[in-house]
Image 1 (cartoon, rainbow, N blue to C red):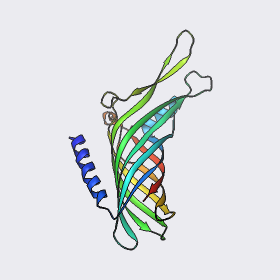
Image 2: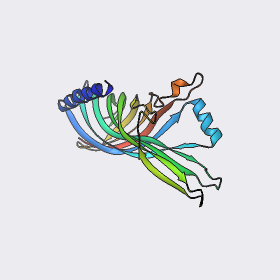
Image 3: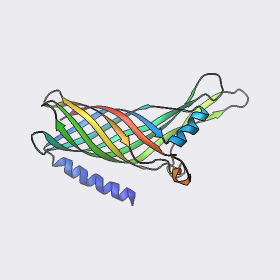
Image 4: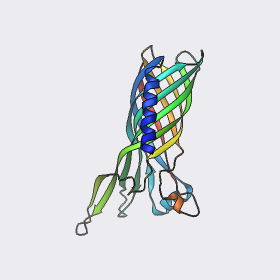
Length: 220
């Protein structure tokens, strides 16, 4: 049912963008991370596990409708990579082992932007994303040599207990260099708990939520 709703939403959004007053495509980078709930983070701290950002790509299309001289309504759809790198000292030799989780999302992001000047505008909006696929690293230790080998495996969302649906808030700024090129930057705050077993804990916050800083260049 969730997949059907996502597909229908994509169709409606694509049709909406096609009738926009201004149409554009964009590409950029997403500095993504996953924030742990307070109790889960305490467990990570006790185990010496650190959360670090990953660098992912984002590509998409946008459409803009002019609401007034200073307000625009924007509709966007993007392929965007999210996730995190978990680092810890496995052997006690001072060298961290880095294990990454990467999730490939289709995000739908409506927003309202306010024109501060003719070139500079600020925006706020929401997004809903659906994870199409992903990978996560695992490791093995050779008991004879002590050598650690890292491998990357495709995520089984149900088996790995990761929720596919993500949603949250976007805030950003956009600067128009000329009639065809715009530079965008912003912050994405996830509100959806991707940890499918977080609710099984009777007490405490064991959630895992996405966040990221994004940069992109758009062609209008």
